[in-house]
Image (cartoon, rainbow, N blue to C red; front, side):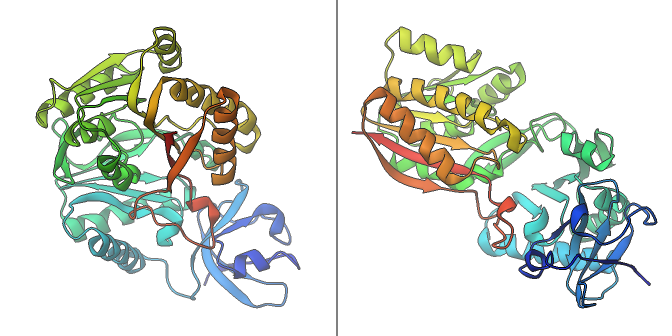
Length: 392
């Protein structure tokens, strides 16, 4: 029998609307008697059943809801949920073998991230409730997918908020070197053990693919914060004559060079290890110009209190990029910072253009890929912004 928590009167509306988090200040009574990670049933002050989830008394997000039914949270539960998530990915990507398999709350598995790289899996358990069930989850994954190897990429700082240590390593099977995946006919080597996040940014898949209609044939492209060279390779495949990729990481530059090579674009793409902020300013000083510029930086803000500081960083790189664009040129600019919403990001771009007294046309405002679905009741699941602008 599950333990029970009750929601304070007036605090149940958000939960009833489909939000999967219960905060500590919404719960009536003390949380001291609960065991971290145990399953609890959530009731309103009127004793109305609201859902079942796991609890962490030490976290601000005290309960994460797994089900709206009084069902057992066991191996069969995870088998069904992961299979449902897989079925959705096969529906939207019938020809792909690499994608985000489970996207936490959007797949009603809060705190769990799973990426599929061909026959390998990369797992993140970002909450205590998921972490204590990791062995069960691994058994399910082995049963469904029979992968060659499963790694955990649990270096995320958010785990510390759950009282968890950071970890990285091989959990099942073995991994020998980088894994090569295919995306829209292009090949990419992925370092699933040491690369950023879980190794590759699937969330930009459709956005990268869209570059074909914006890159000028025989044009010059600048890919800032290039990481593994995804945007660079797509730009070269779209007909660019020259692509320059910038990143501050030696590993990223090495991976970008390999990805350009395996796709036959070594003569078109070149990569530079630099401080991207400094390099953008230097390119402006040198009066360089580009037909297209991509800005795809890492998240500049990890908390709501750092938004103002982060916006200064976003404005700085966008100002410099706008200066570097030829007339008619395209700026593809992104933010993966959840705490900066679409309107705030758009306002920053408006201010940047205004400061330069230049005009830009907003051609598209895109979001994250289909394997990172947005749960309508949880705005926290929508984080990626990708604005495509033209200098006019």
